[in-house]
Amino acid sequence: MPVSPEQLMEELRTLCRGRGVQTPGIDVHVGPALRQVCGIVESDGAEAVRTKLRDWVANAARAFPAEVRNAVLAPLGLHEEAQFRFLNERIEWLAKQQDRGARTVRRRMEAGLQRLVEVALQPAPSTAHVTPSELWHVKEFDALLKLDGPTPACTERRTVVADTDGVNEIAWSITIPSPTPDGAPGDLDVEVLHGVELIGHERPSPRRFLMKLRLPRPLNTGQTHQFALEVKVPRGQSMRPTYVFWPERMCESFRLRVRFDREDLPESVWAVEEALARDTDDLTPWPKKLPIDEIGEIDVSFPHPRQGRGYGVQWTPRA
Image 1 (cartoon, rainbow, N blue to C red):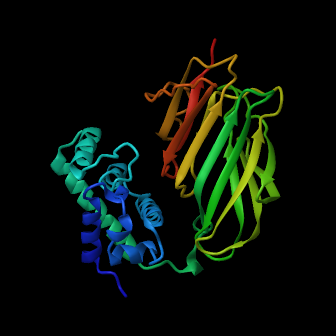
Image 2: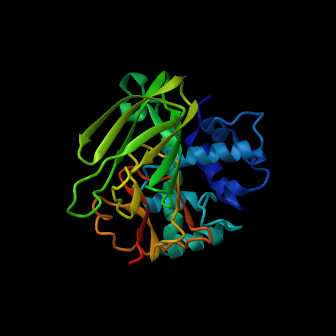
Image 3: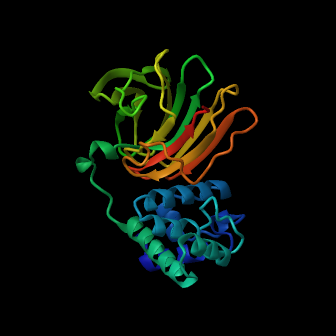
């Protein structure tokens, strides 16, 4: 049956109260409108309901302006830095983050919830007009950059989700900076670890590598598949002290771990988040410094990275 926009809006407002989506026993607090738009079924337990709510909100809000997106995630208890018990506390936190009054933040919350309703009730797109970038998206991207071996190597694991039926190929790309500001871009060694077959590759520009990967079987809408690649810098070729991910399509989460050589730890490491083009070229330290743990590693996560923005880490090598 059709979802009423008024009912869906009221259910979203109700969900913001208390602990939001983190409320224990969330499965008994979700109304029929939210159940329908999130695909929640009777047999779903609390954690399954929580996951479906989180994924639906993340997907729906991915194109919102940052201040509106955060004004949705925080009140619903989905912002990792705003896990407070009461809605008023999350509103106060958001007001400080945005340097605005609580009334302004609540207006933004209402605007964000209204946007969620609009997204939920928009007509489903016809698959006849689906463009290649809409065929699939990345659910999880997990990268491990190892700098303690004979040459830099990165293991990249991706879980992809089909957004239409019959997805059997995907494209993977990487753009590398030159080792020095005035140097020429280098080369890469790419090895498939599991989950896909490399069936084509090209180098559209000196810095960009593009691979065509075949899945073991076609995916239908909503189905997921994981694959892994290992990317190495050829021996003797230097690497700039930077690893930044620029999403070309929707990505629900990005996690990066870097393992440094414990005999040659960098002077400082910082996170790069929502960078614009050229923001990372000069390796100027960003405000968010990252501590290196006792085994020489850093671990940083970026929920819901935006397309066209840069996320990752950079560091200053020890002189």
